Amino acid sequence: MSMMTNTLGRYFAGRFLVAAVGVFASIFVLLVLVDYIEMVRKTSGLVSASAITVAQTSLYRVPQLLEKLMPFCVLIGAMTCYLALSRRLELVVARAAGVSAWQFISPALASAIILGTVATVAYNPMSANLRELSKRMEAELFGSAPGAGIQDASGFWLNQINSDGQSIINAARSEQQGVRLTGLTVFRFDTDLQFKERIEAREASLEEGRWAFKSVRRYSLDKPPVDQENYYLSTTLTPAQVRNSFSTPETVSFWQLPGYIRSSESSGFATAGYRLQYHKLIAQPFLLAAMVMLAASVSLRFFRMGGVQKMVLSGVGAGFLLYVLSKVTEDLSKAELMHPIAAAWLPVCVGGLTGFLALLYQEDG
Image (cartoon, rainbow, N blue to C red; front, side, top):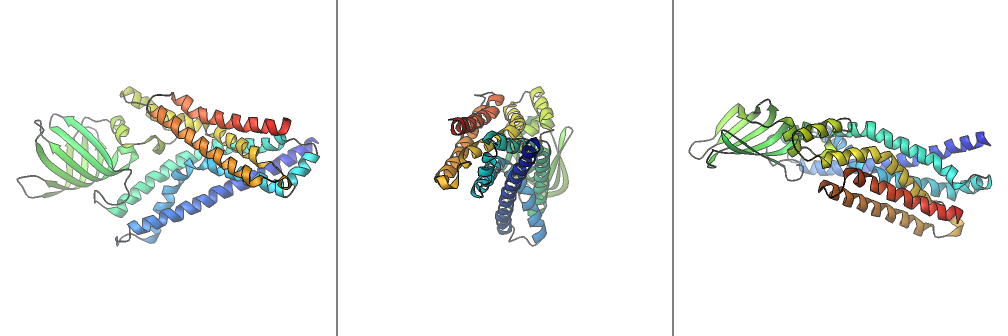
């Protein structure tokens, strides 16, 4: 019986993995196609943009977006797996052999935890690196135009004040968490806050005590524009300060987050966003397991008993409500109204307990 249970467990785990990976791959292909079409539309007027480069840019952008959809991929994959097993009467045979629902759910739970661990320690750093590569390729595609191309939100803004006066920096794109910027416009003011000049540059990198600009054009009120290959602007900003303005927690890999939290704390910046992202990645394996519990609670009904469509819709609705809850707790945590640990683990607890109680009611009355 032990051998049968182990063999059956491996079979159920394999079916779940095939279904979950299949859903993940299908959504990945769909997102790549949609993003590629959008990139083709935006690069249609660029002669230097090749189809291969545009496709690579789209391919590198999608993994980070798909990481947010991973819980739903597991939810849909688990429902697909159990509904297929029920339709082929394999669950009926398993129950007739004395295997309880808890026993054939446990392989999927273990597989979900393994998938979540791999996603945290390997997929997340890979997606962050690919996102940086996509930003670099976007900068090469769209050139030096400050407003060209695909921007993150409405661009990035940074204000610095030193002995020379005030400088307001706007960058269309950010790489390496703000250390390298492209598509720049800088407005400079003197110590009396009177406008001094406007600087446009293709790119800039933060060096010790200064910004190094390349391909610069300087505009002033009483002089014609001046073109310079290199230009340096003094600054007192540190990489940690720039990172706080230009980077988002989602663009930092799991292994780098502890260092970012420590550097932000030492610089006196808020770390709620970085802490929340760190604990969300730690909780991700258990969130995927909670999705399996939710899926099992609505997918173990036999087809001959009817009501399958209603139960599947209820499972999708439960996943959507869990997503809304996670967004609410995320916003509360970023506003420092909820501790990051509570915000990261509350959706996991709610989803897991809901699925557990539903299964307990169905199986044990």
